[in-house]
Length: 69
Image (cartoon, rainbow, N blue to C red; front, side, top):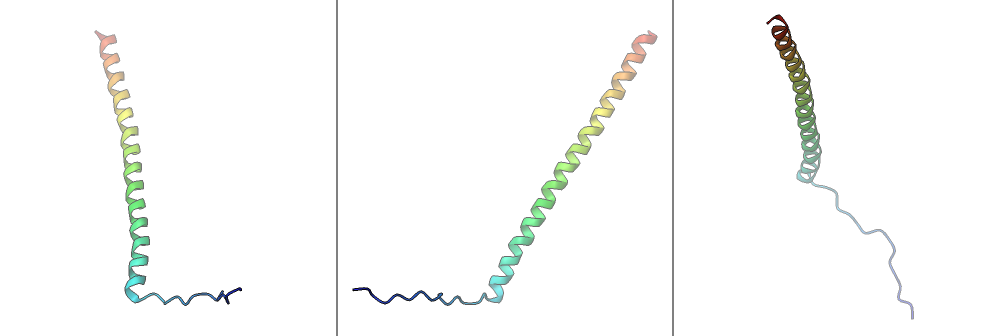
């Protein structure tokens, strides 16, 4: 009635050298991409802050010249 079932774990072949290289290369590429994206975001936020300071300074200069006229 009941067939004999084999519940032992299947044999898994070990990774080859190329598979290991590809495996770790994907992790390094992901870290590199995250680093690049975060560097872009940080540089954009810093340039945005400096742009605001320059705009405020130019507005203050304009106001000062209008008051003097």
